[in-house]
Structure formats: structure tokens, C-alpha cells
Image 1 (cartoon, rainbow, N blue to C red):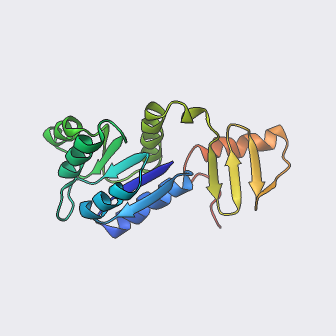
Image 2: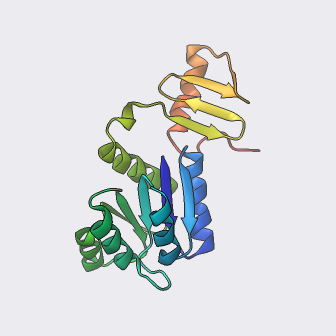
Length: 176
């Protein structure tokens, strides 16, 4: 699934991209709303992650524009430090499908992204889910692992550990 993230803080943008890439998503980052709007005219995304406070076009304005031009798709997740109830209500009212407060927590971000995608694309929820870590790929539905594209031969007991850990971003496959 292709995800576009608009975040002006380079460290936060990289963190989002890394978390989503490790969870098996393709994530493209944009530093401002204007760059995202240009990209949306050329290609489609399955989900948008939007920070509220952006240079130039605000996240609020961006969500409003997307909803006016594209209707209910793609789903939009606000990822922002604006914590006031009125901001949350305004963000959801303008068209965001969900609202997540910073600081970014990897497990929460991945869970919210998967939830939004599952609701928006129910047919895709039945497709294969691959979680990649370096040379390794875990298919949690088929319960298989490949290393460098080659199948790894594991017993059922040995396979249960990577599948359960792969559901928690960063829980396994750490370099030591």
C-alpha cells in the first residue's frame, strides 16, 4: 500500500517513513502541503498522513482540499501535536478519518494505519501481508519466511515466534 506523509520536521518525517517501511508499507514523505498537492495530481496514494502545522498550506487546508477534490478516498490520518479537543473535533470534521497525537509511538501508528486501510480497502485485508527486515521477509498469513528471496525451512514451533514478533514493529530483527 502506498502512503504519503506530509511532515515538515525532517526527523519526524524520517521516523514515520522508517516505521511504516518496517511494517511493510511504501511511504513517500513531503516537507510541505504544496509538494503533496503536486504529487496528488500525478499519482494516487492509499492513505495520507498529515501534520497540522505546516509551512504554507496548513494540514487543515490540505485535508479540506483533498476532501473537496477526492471525496472520501483516500483515508486521512492527522498526526499532530495539537491536543485541544476543539482541534481534534475540527480535524475530524474537515475530513480526517482519524487523529493521532505526537509524540509518535510506532505500535500505535502502525495499528491506526492498518485499521484505516482495513476499513477503506476490505478486499486488500485478505491479501498477503509481508513484513520486511533487511534480507528477511515474514508472510504472517502463510506463516513463511524468506531470506534473500529463498524460503527458510522452519518447524511450526520456530515459525510462531517471528510471526508473533512481527506484529510489533521493532520487536525483533534488531541488529546487535
